[in-house]
Length: 186
Image 1 (cartoon, rainbow, N blue to C red):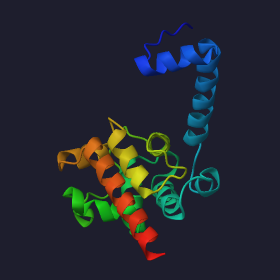
Image 2: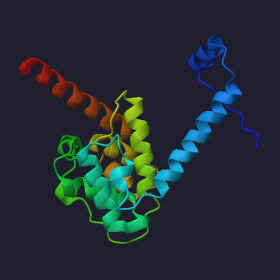
Image 3: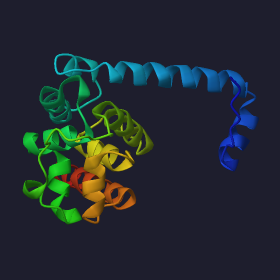
């Protein structure tokens, strides 16, 4: 299979300056991404905690709750329900600031939800990396829910006025405030 890529100008220039072979880099990156996605798609309630070492305890609990509820077919709605059920993660604390009442969110009802929990977990990891974070917390799961275009949970949040850029900004602001508060308490 042949794949052509259009790279952003800055990335193309950095690649050219590095002198590294683009084809080899792309091939390795795709291999790693496919392996990660395959591993995530095989998660279940018993393997979620051990398979997500970069996840905070609260985020792991939310994902485990999602897989306990939905089994191997856990959906984005199960992840949102897991976040709300866990209750103490940053995502649940941010929802009211974003105009969403966590208690009013719909419960998973077994109806078709094309957004898989595995896709949300993968997108949460990407969101964390994009923010320069070396962990994945509930706030990143929230961003993953919003980044997943087909999932019912993301659709529900977007229908209530929450968008991905706004949620990212709220996460950054909350974490900046937390970091500042910790620094001034020392």
